[in-house]
Image (cartoon, rainbow, N blue to C red):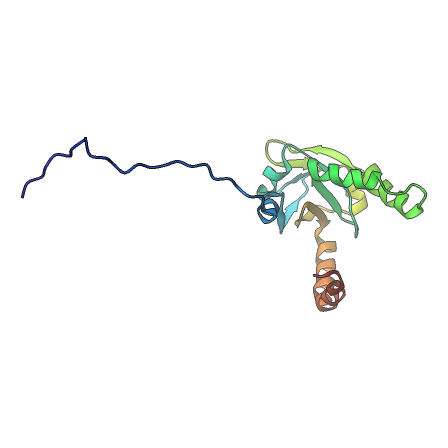
Length: 177
């Protein structure tokens, strides 16, 4: 059996490159947005620094906004998410007392914080006091924001909410969830 040399004059299979136009798919867009998920236990050190979960750091970037949250926790947002929320808050009616009060709680309580090279933020005293943060805290990811809770308060809240999950789901059914 002999092997014949390849004849270079014969046509070879060609590979055609073609441009593929991508169609807009909102579902793909949704996956690319910032998404914070999970529950992490951390401690605030003696210098009032709190480590941010490694999984959250890239989405937060080098700076974030931390503010008073609901249920006596703190909310932390990436700058872009904060800008969206702050714009909505600034557009609420000034003549409505509840709107003014909520905007004040969220906006006046907000502080831009730097995330240091080790992934830590400095929690301002007034926010630490508002949330009643002790040394042990829970950092929870809630899709577009991060919540920071005192560990004991989180456990009480979570236990209560888990017990009522069925009733809560029934009420949310009206919202299509």
